[in-house]
Amino acid sequence: MKPFTYERAESAAGAAKAAETPGARFLAGGTNLLDLMKLEIERPTHLIDVGRLPLSQVEETADGGLRIGAVVSNSAAAADRRVRTLYPLLSHALLAGASAQLRNKATIGGNLLQRTRCAYFYDAAKPCNKRAPGAGCSALGGDARGNAILGASQHCVATHPSDMAVALSALEATVETVTPAGAARTLGIDDVHRLPGETPHIETNLEPGELVTAVVLPPPPEGRQEYRKVRDRASYAGGLFSLALAGNRMALGSVALKPWRAAKSEAALAAGASHAEAAEAELADARPLGRNQFKLTLARRVMVAALEGTPVR
Amino acid sequence: MDSPLREAPVVAFEITVNGAPRQVAVDVRTTLLDLLREHLGLPGTKKGCDHGQCGACTVLVGGRRINSCLSLAVMHEGESVTTIEGVGLPGNLHPLQAAFLERDAFQCGYCTPGQICSALGMLEEVSRGEPSQATEDLGATTIALTDEEIRERMSGNICRCSAYPQILEAIRDVAGATA
Image (cartoon, rainbow over all chains, first blue to last red; front, side, top):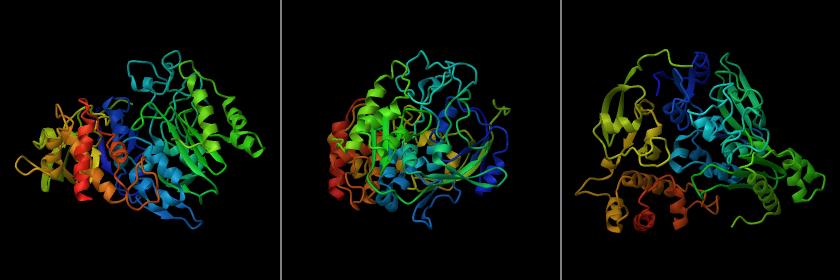
């Protein structure tokens, strides 16, 4: 780990202000950032510990939704009675991620902003446009088994690793932030993360130093909520494909560098398409990379099974 | 950007470990794991992968299990940490430690302190009614600790010797005795 200075933030606005310091990063649970710092993929020169900010409550909003503070742990959010009752999709998605130890430490804000697990992003001996813009993408032409099939570019084919964010997309959550200038902002969940394009090192639409303060869930949609995740092991493994269903809304995980709202499938269903046709509507845009060709078949099957309501086991 | 700092600052703070308040002054980069092992003379907590993947470094902070390798010590200023040395020592073993011996729930033993701390945290989580991926009914207020639940909840602890069946039995013995 490279040397850095450390401060514990006293307020969200103070943390965002302090984050204007070049080389500064927010530290909350630390489960992703410290891992990457050990590998010297992340090299912050200043850490602002936001873990003790008063953003650790789950509270009801006036319109019948929930506001989950950014430093609520993944475990606490998943176990919250209101989340379990009104948004079982979110509990299921959170519990499908990482291990119990990691979920106890990892926060909601950190889960949202965690970085890709692309093997080439983690391999400092190989070029990666996320680590070093312009260096090239090693996953293209490499082992891209886990990589993206939607929304990728010739510069980056990584996926976003969060299960939670896929659920949030289907639930049409919003994300509250505070900017270094002290302004409060609200972004739709689908506007937080960026597709790689020509600048895969710019991963979100947050300003430098902008701090996530909460995730807000609108009242739950009518209808069934479900999260399905397919992976190499039954537990404690990243997804190969996942799907969040919330009423007539659907989002896909492990297919792109952001949680992928399946708007074309939703539109097809609304127009009376069959489940298979609805899946195809979204997947017609997919561009597999050889080794991840299977994701297309997997996606099609899981989408149809989820829409049919076929039991998982 | 690369660090302009040549040396990392030293941070001084108090942390309670196994019930005793300790004053420490360490390089800010020191993980909780390294603080315990290298500075406080508590080598029971093990360093396996050092990247949060194996669970050998599991300790309890404020009663909750975490990977001590993925936490800076300074993040835990003022908090209370329990390591395997605080769970029980020879002659005064915790029932779970005794159950691991009885069931022969290890071979090399390197993962065992993490397994035991993790299982203690897990049993607390279950007693609070917290769900897991294996929980059929999210609305349930009490969790039936089935074998599937134990396996799912312990998936963050890897055993290279693959003593999983015996680890499951040891945990089941203690969970059954206290349920």
